[in-house]
Image 1 (cartoon, one colour):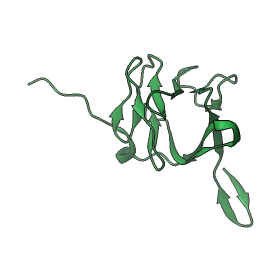
Image 2 (cartoon, rainbow, N blue to C red):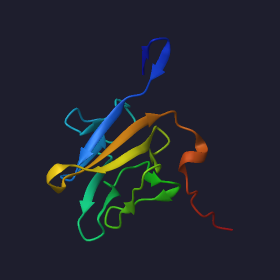
Image 3 (cartoon, rainbow, N blue to C red):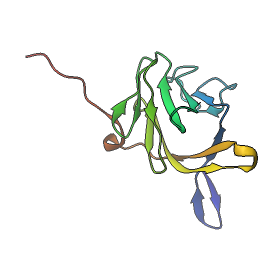
Image 4 (cartoon, one colour):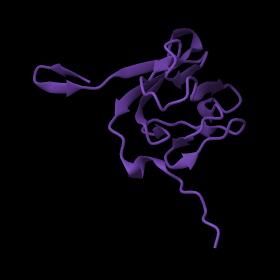
Length: 128
């Protein structure tokens, strides 16, 4: 986060219809410099069938969540404007907007936000 006119600015990332990855690899579409994050932690894909972006986990150790629901590696979670996605308990993003560009290309803007416990976690069931 930087300073702009005395206010804190949040980093925004753009993901298009071609999709993208989130992780600590510098080659990620959304680079998140956290050592405990997987190199490729999650990915976002465009589903032309559903006409929506889907969030999928890349078999990360800490999990990937959208609005408290765990994303699987095969079964994605649908992203909507205002959705909160979390990479483990390490990083959070809000979907600022999803737009249709000229030529039919879709574009989604993600804004980094401060992680809060209530953003994330579907807690695992405890055995009794």
